[in-house]
Length: 74
Image (cartoon, rainbow, N blue to C red):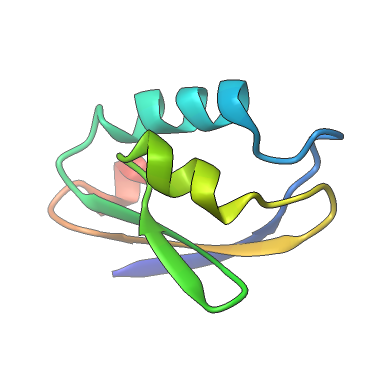
């Protein structure tokens, strides 16, 4: 399992289009990819999950990846 902290630098935050791109990249990997924000954690392979976090600009998120291709996924 690999865990990374990051900050959202998109002016609009993680809205529909960036969320869709995030999901598209995550689905290329077999590993489970999770995104956490303010105590809530969602599967990045779910567009509705990612959008439900409604992460605004400048906020810190935690990405957790676990699986056999986790290094490549991160």
